[in-house]
Amino acid sequence: MKRDRRLVLFSGAGVSADSGLQTFRDAGGLWENHKVDEIANYLTWRDRSASVHRFYDARRAQLASASPNAAHQLAARLQKRHGAVIMTQNVDDLYERAGCEDVIHLHGRLTQMRCVACGRVWDVGYEAWPEGGRCACNSRRGVKPNVVFFYEPAPEYPKMFKMLSSLGPEDVLLVSGTSGQVIQIGDLARKSRARTILSNLTTDRGDKDGVVHIDDRHFNHVLHGRAIDTAARLEHLIDWLMSAPLQRPAEHEQGSPDPAF
Figure 1 (cartoon, one colour):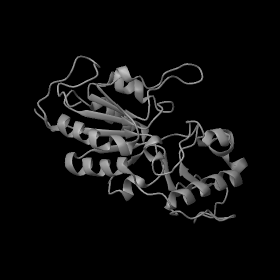
Figure 2: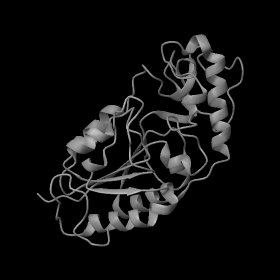
Figure 3: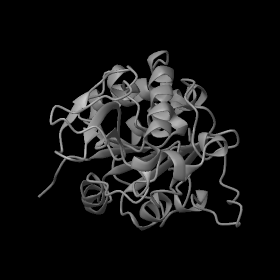
C-alpha cells in the first residue's frame, strides 16, 4: 500500500544560535563556562539547587529577548506544507513562537518546572524561580527545571527511536545544528533508509579525541553555513525531494539528480 512521504526535522542547539542563544559544546559555549556536574547532573542537582536555579533562570531571561530565526520559520513552513515532524534537542520555545505545532522536545522545556516528588509539570514562562519556591504538593527540594539532566531518563527518546527506525526510502530526514555528541544522530542517519540531509555550520573535524560524530559522507545531501544563509536552498531541496519521483542515489552518496543542488 502506497503511503504519503514523511519529513522529519531533527535539530540541536546550533539552530537557535542565530537567535543569540549560546550553544553548549562549541567554542565559547555554555559548557566552557559552567561545570556540568554543578548545573546538569540529575544525581547531584538537589545538593546544588541554588546554582541550578540561577543557571536556568539566566537561560530563561536570555530566551525572553530572543526571536525565531530563519531555521525556525523554515520549519513552520515545512510543517504546514509537508506535515513535518519536528524533533529537537533544544529546550527553548522558538519553534513554537515561529508557528510550529506538536514539537517533540527530546530534552524538555526551559519554560517549565517539574516536581520530581509528585510528577507535576507547570509553565513559568520566562520568570525566575523564586528562592524557597514550592510545588503545589508543598515540595521545595523536589522542584527542578523541566530539562533533562545527565543521568536522568529522557521520556521522549522511545518516540524518537520509533520514528527514525520507521522511515523508508520515500521519506526525508533533515539533521541540523547538532554536534551529534549527545544523541548519536550521525550513526542513526547512516543506518536510516530515508533520504538524508545534513545542515550544519561546518564539517565535523572531530572532537578533542579526534572522533567525528557527524560525518558528511553518511548523508545524501550536505549544506554548510548559517541558517539565515542556507534556508532558501534547503527549502528548495526539501520541496523537491518531497515531490519529485523517487530516485534515490547510491547508498549515502552525496548529491542529487537535480543539478541545482
